[in-house]
Image (cartoon, rainbow, N blue to C red; front, side, top):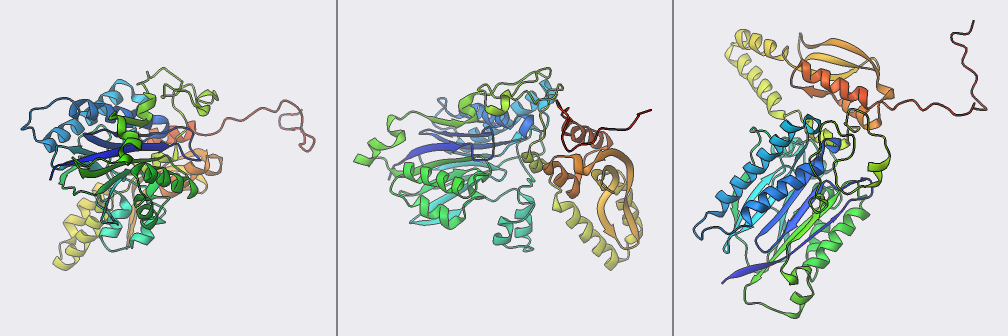
Amino acid sequence: MALTYRYVALTDTGLRRSNNQDSGYASSRLLLLADGMGGAAAGDLASSQTLNVIRGEVERDLPEDTDALSVLGTAVDHANDRLGQLITDDPAVEGMGTTLEALLWDGEKLAWAHIGDSRVYRLREGRLAQISTDHTFVQSLVDEGRITREEARVHPHRSLLLRAMLGRDDNEADLSWLQPSAGDRYLLCSDGLSDMVDDDGIEQAMRLESIDAAATELVRLALEGGGVDNVTVVIGEFVEATTEDETDAELACADGKPQIVGAAADAPRPRQSDETGPVAAVPTPVDTTGEHPPTGREQQDPEELRYAPRPPSRWRWVRWTIGVLLLLGLAGGVAYWAYEWSQQQYYVAEDDGRVAIYRGVDASLPGITLQHIDERTDIQIEDLPDYQQGRVEAGISAASREDADQIVENLQSSLPEPTPSTSPSATTEPATEGTP
């Protein structure tokens, strides 16, 4: 039985964000969603460039015997290379990245690429199943049996990513095949939906009569649930290729044209390092405030927390190593090596109300001190924006001392500039410092 699919893509900026860093795409061959990250470091640029590169490579005519999964994998690699080149050309966008969900139809099955915490769900015979696995710190805890899926939904570090497209070679996408059946509905969504709406709510919406109605309802539920992030949904519904009914003509895909939504529709352009304006080509209210610092960097966005994962594998490995050493009596040599390694690590955290650079690792072992303060700064924790305070209190990992210095510099740049008073306050006493 030959299959085809109907499609729809829909997005909303959400209730708390000023711009949309998601990009969504739907056509008769490709379903794609990219959730850009990095805030001021151009998450919208990352998602739109990723979409455009992949779309350009897989939508062109290919030989009939071409392997769709190979084509998709190559396109993903080229998109990642493109991000790396943008970062090399303009260090101001260092730190940008994106998640990715892409389904490429070869006429019989779907080639699937997945990286990050955007998700793919499948509705089959009225039952919803999540078929993607989040590349997150919290998901690793679920996999280890340390927390439940319900606890994961409210975990304070649920947004920490272990893998994403960052323009580097150390984060590869998962590639696999999916075999759809007639009646299946596939949903690609950003975490702006999955964080706001539980699986039961998503299932009920996906059961609606048409995919257009389902997409609208999903976005509505996300906004009703708080709308704290951009929310984007892309849906494909598989039907027999010969099936035609009156509802087809009423769908958004009836004209056969591709649908592109979010940041990619606004076509954000690479910026130069000496520019102080926003990344997006289409102005938004936040773009016109004039609050961008002269260095061209905006204040860090909470999305940047997603780039600060502390991979649990490191500590699982350390705990496992210590246990083996205790059992085998080989603690001496390996413990010495582990200590030397720890002293080459750095992180930024709080010390007595101020920002400090620590050397070592944020962990404790009986009788062993693994960290010490390498430098105390004058930055007061209480002067930082709330989201920056949270980052420092949780500890920000650094790849090197130079990286730690850069983190401190970024924190310094996020301090609000004092606003001079234009008239004396009725309740404020005049300053006496320096008065003869």
